[in-house]
Length: 406
Figure (tube, rainbow, N blue to C red):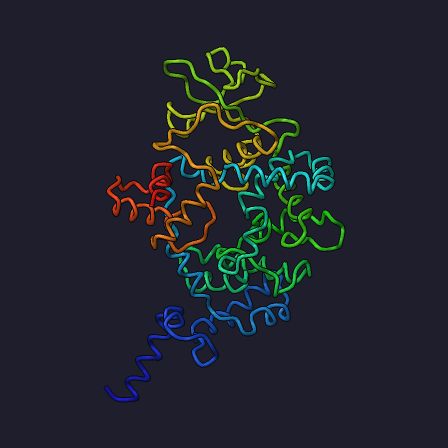
């Protein structure tokens, strides 16, 4: 093939493949993605039409390059089909509760003010903070935090499934820079653009962000009062009912129960009772029955505030984890009926020990964070295969005891 034909073909590949070429070459001006640069130039008019000044756009996008890590994460997002115990064990545990209680004491004066202003239970806010960023610890991790403008521009250009979302969020993020609430170097977030201590996407930030500490900036990255107040504002504006709970763990009578929403009084008449033996409050409140782990696991009656929590993340498991964690931070003792876990549960420290011992045996190379994700499960299965145990990947006391013996 001639040099001219080779050059012509390479040009065609750059135009057609766009971002894919950038992923194969070292970063730097000599390997700038021509298709991406063309997209950046063309999107300027859309951003300006959306209210972003040309100067802000040019400054933010002046030397931006695609982020290959963002596209890899977008491509490899898992389907969330984990059993109930797996989801909740990674989020509602002794360490998240203990840290929440520490934060409740540390930030009490601000939580008092936020609760008085917005009417949202402080423990719900602390639980959301835990769920979203592990009380801010995730913001310290360079392997997770990324430049929001770069991430959203990459998705807008290179991910057809998320391009519409990313374009909308990119304009919103540029307008955040324009307000001066945060500067470009500190506008950091997840690969998908969720930002700050309580992980708001840019459009939600625009809608709900609050300057609680009164310094003239709505800084959900560095100001804990601003971040928690912003979450409280979201919940209030979506209908949070002050002074009321999210729901109740309950015991069920034998036999089939009718579906649908009923008052707590009606559920009570059907034989549904609180699992801890205490009476229901506000018997006129409507509630919906949920059994996320089947009839053999814990059952719950969810009232209005449960649905309000789902305005943050529209998943029953998320809202339930927030509610359960909040109750324990407030001093509750946890579930009466545990999840149908097919093994003996480990404490948070034991889960960290499990990861450390797997690492020492050469099976695990991740962080000792007590969170049992795919890497930990694969390591457990490899170890189970080695010692002749059933290869289920469960973080069980049985596996930890085997590791301790060795």
